[in-house]
Length: 430
Image 1 (spheres, one colour):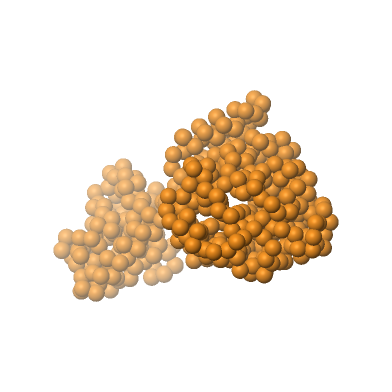
Image 2: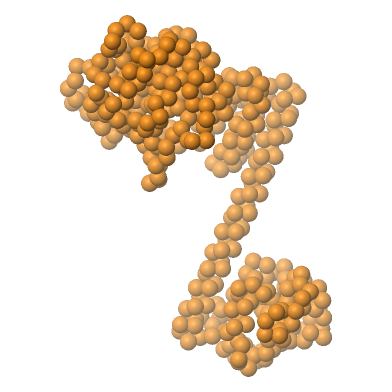
C-alpha cells in the first residue's frame, strides 16, 4: 500500500437519474474517509442529470459524459480507465452509502495482505415496501476463495465493493456485452486470483426500481446466456449448468414470449455445446418449461376456483340479507325433493338452509363415497351407483367448477331428474 491514506477512485455511472443522483452523490461526499475522487460517468442522459451534477461544488468530483448510451458496464470501464486511485469503489445513481463505508473498507485493506483483492459489505435491498439483508445467512462461504460459491449465483453488488486496482489488470474490466449481471461475471474472474473479505454490516442501501436494468427479464436471459458460454467449463465441472437453465426457463416462461426466449437460449448457448451436451440440456430445458407451465396453470385454476367460490358465497349472503332464500326457488318451481351433489361447505350450507322446510333432502351424492353420512341420518350415494330408483325432483350440483362434467355423467344415466347448479339457483333469486 502506497500510503496510510491511499486514494480511492469512486466510479458512479448514471443514466437519466435526475430524481435520485443528488442524494447518491451526497452519500459519497459525506464519507468519513475523505481521500477519494468521485468520477461520475453520464451515459448520455437526456434529462436534467448534468445540471444537477454541475450544481454540486466539490473539487473531488470529475464529470464525464458519453456522447451515446453504451450501458452500465461501459460507463464503469470509462471510469476505471481514467481512475487515479490505488483502490476502485463503485456507487450507483439511485443508491446510498452509510457515512463510514469507505473508512471501514480501507481500514480492512490495511489489516490484510495482498491476497485480498475485494473488500465488500453487506447491504439492504429495498423492494416493494420490503427490506432484505444480503448476503443471506444460508450463504456460508462469504470470504476467502469464494469462486466455487459464486458460480452458484451472485451476492455481491458493485456498490458494496472496493477493489484493488491491480485486480482489473489481472482479470480484466467489466464485460460490456452484458445488459445485466456485469458485477457477477466480474467477480467470477477476479475470484480465480484473489480472495474476498466481507464487512458484515449493511453499509449500502440499494433501491430496486421497475424501470431499472435489473428489472428487465429478457436482459437477464441474455446476460446469463453469455455468462454460461463464457464460463461453461467451470459450470459443467461443478454440475450446476442445470441450475442456471432452470432459472432461465422460469424467466422464459414468465415474461410471456416463450418461443422467442427459448429460441434465443438454444441458439446462443446450447448449440455451442458438444452434441451430447446440447441434446441433454435442450431436453432438460423443455422439461423445466413444461413443469412450470403445469404449475402456473394449476395456480391459475385454484385462483379462479377461490374467486368463483367467494363470488357465490357473497351473492348468497346478499340474498339472505334481502330476505331471499334458496327455498323460494324450489317452491316456485314445484320442486319438493332434491339430492345434493357434494358434501363440502356449499353442500352443507344448502342442507342447513333447507333443513326444517318442506323441501325433502333425500340423499347426498359424492363421486367416490361408500359410507353413511354421519350426521342427520341422510344417506350418501356414490355417483356411479345412482339409478332411476333414486327418484328425486332435482339434483343440485354444488361444486362450481365440475358442474358440466358431473351433469354429463348424470345425463348419460338417462335419469328423469332436473339437474341444476347451486350457482344458477343463487343467481336466479338475487
